[in-house]
Image 1 (cartoon, rainbow, N blue to C red):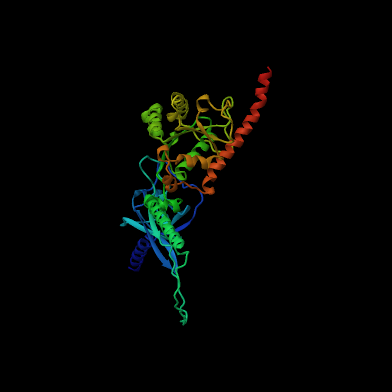
Image 2: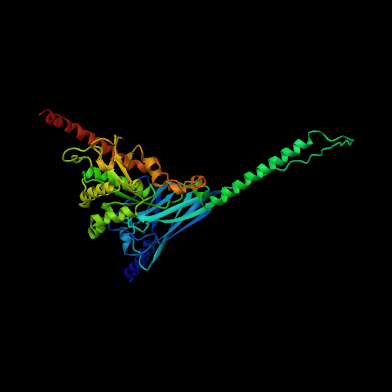
Length: 430
């Protein structure tokens, strides 16, 4: 009898405590984990609320997670606020928690913040694969006032005696110039106020972006990335470049390694034609060193299989550039991105078709490249648009992975070129 009662109470206690999942959020400086196949469902709901704790204004971030079969793949939740990433982990993990008879759970994270227009993004981890027309993050904004209360101390009243002497005088000779000066200043002030009002009305929708553009998500720019099938080391550097553009460069990137299934259905030629037509810019990534048989694989980096489509897409894009060579407007959307030190366009390392394209070099021209990707069109370059247009910004830690892969690739290519040089000299002498 007592054993049955004890077992019943233990069962009830386990059911109650299993629903208590705690969340802990810490700063996170690396790229968010992604999964190409298995990923949890998106965040169900998301709210922002300003609260005051011990006289300090703080932001209460609340999000809801649906209880479904995909919870076993849920590793955590990512919060992006004011150019800072936070990684939230659950204890116990959702995969081991018993969440029967529940459809949704809310979690909260309290964080101190500044004032102005605050933008926050939330997404479950690992992130789902990149698909056109979908966005893994839920975005919300909140306006926090920057005004401060000031206290004025009362002062003791003071009595001032003023003696007025009235006498008949003639008008001064300088009264008319003073009146003219006041009238001219008033007209000038009125003109300045009118211009300020016009600028305010023109830039009203973008004022928050001008002051807090680092916190406002940009409209992604469609970009197509094509690269030659050199080796796995070069491919990893290209993927790191595409991930940087997608997560920190404000771009919607199309690359073969992320759309292999679609390429298999349409074929390389049709897929390339559609993506080049819909993209604003086509970035052709070029290696810095080209040796017989290409570069040897880098033993310090893990090997990765190069998609079969990469062998077909690079010759197709060279042919497409050659077909647009006679039209400067059509050729302007094709850019060359070199991974490594800047080289002369006349160098034999760069194909003839690409020597007429605008060229950028990583990492030296990374900021210049991001600005050009979001540059206004020629017919929109007015003074007010230049004052009110959006910008793109990223921190040094966001470029860490890309910088490491490019530097490793550059060092590896330099070593390969030095090893091949004696062989070339022997062949030339023979």
